Length: 94
Image 1 (cartoon, one colour):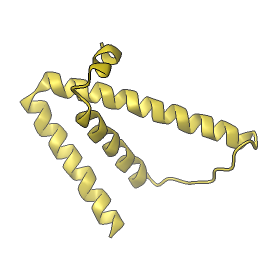
Image 2 (image 1 turned 180 degrees about the vertical axis):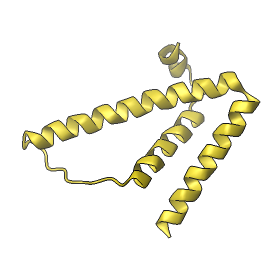
Image 3 (image 1 turned 90 degrees about the vertical axis):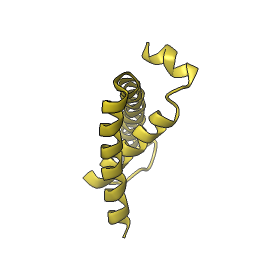
């Protein structure tokens, strides 16, 4: 059941982002820029955790499936969409 919910969530994200791109191209570019920054931050955090695991300073043994990674990217998109009107992101994205 969890897999079906994740797939529906991903499909809704793709459909909404496609519609939003056609409706407001400038706004959708801002949402994609914010999502890209959030994804880079997430990758940086995972990289640090992996380095700490290799150095035996931190115990983290979690494997992610492609579906979980895609769901995480969808969550990042929705977070970016929710905070697209924040003044903070105007300074970060330019």
